[in-house]
Length: 217
Image (tube, rainbow, N blue to C red):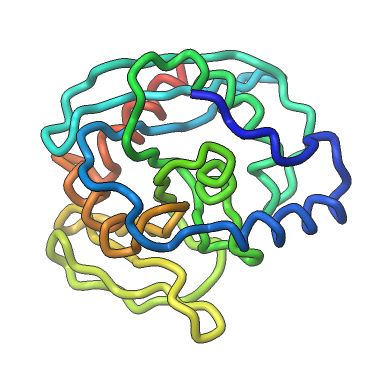
């Protein structure tokens, strides 16, 4: 899988903001697929100066591992909250090029439109890949929400400036929720459903949990 070359990566923060605004206008917030049979989880871990990008492809909805890939590379963009996609996507792009199984949906460990300029990692990646993508984060970057019920599947809406930007989703009874948002080419309802169906025994969906293990090794 190759990403579209829609902008330069060696840019300033001011230029990055312009890119975020431009790409956020391309995001499709409804389902643009007929069926989901494969879901890939993406993550990235840092080992000194080296970034390890990982991709784990699972069947859906039974969540059986089909393929896993890792790629080690260096990052050239500084760590700046709100602009992590400019730091991480070039390395993630390399691991996606290695994947032989074309996933129907990508889940990124990070935000989708639940971002100050509505272009978190999952949305940025989704526009460049022109694929359905979901942001699944362990904490809130922006917005507010009520605590969902304690049982698995309970959720409340994540809201910023009167706009629904995601859901706070309880993926397992009695554990902390995750924060799910649209990346691209998927509705919020479907994004929530895919994440919940991929959570078999743990708080995190299996594709993300497996990708995190690969990136951390």
